[in-house]
Image (cartoon, rainbow, N blue to C red; front, side, top):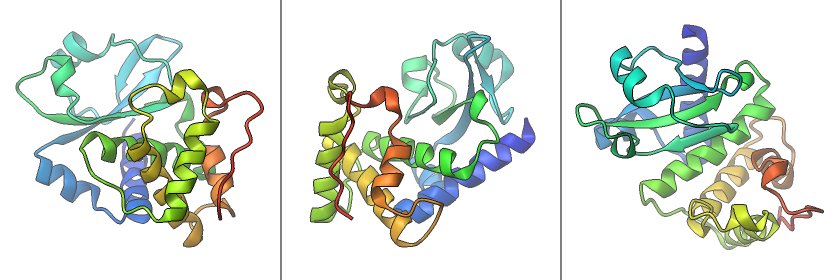
Length: 201
């Protein structure tokens, strides 16, 4: 899976830079964290070490059979809930079914998860009034059970709004409007029925 590892890591770093103006490797270094990229294999109901950087015994004992069935995820300080004491890691998860998919699908998903990452490490967004309005609109348009989850808070939504605006304004990717990007970043299963989001461009 080395090709997938290199592509995902490169894409993550680029999206972090373009959407948030941040250097992923520098942040990981400053935090003293490794980045683990883990694949979610929904069919086999197991997780996969995409880059082969996790000790196999540790992976089998603590990670491989962890339940996960979603498109993607990010977990800062993942070693804490996993009960791992000899290494510190932040984890990006991506469903193996999405490996190799088009940028217009993958990039909004990555920015969604990178926004969670920034929220998890307690970073405040540099949000404009328009970004704050768009963040509030996102939360209102999400399904109540999704919106009520602690991870889908105002700070996360503002980070996502900032990232969407920057990428669309800079002409990066195939989304011509912020609304298009947001609709790609928030899957249908996370939305209210009759989704109609009021985004300011």
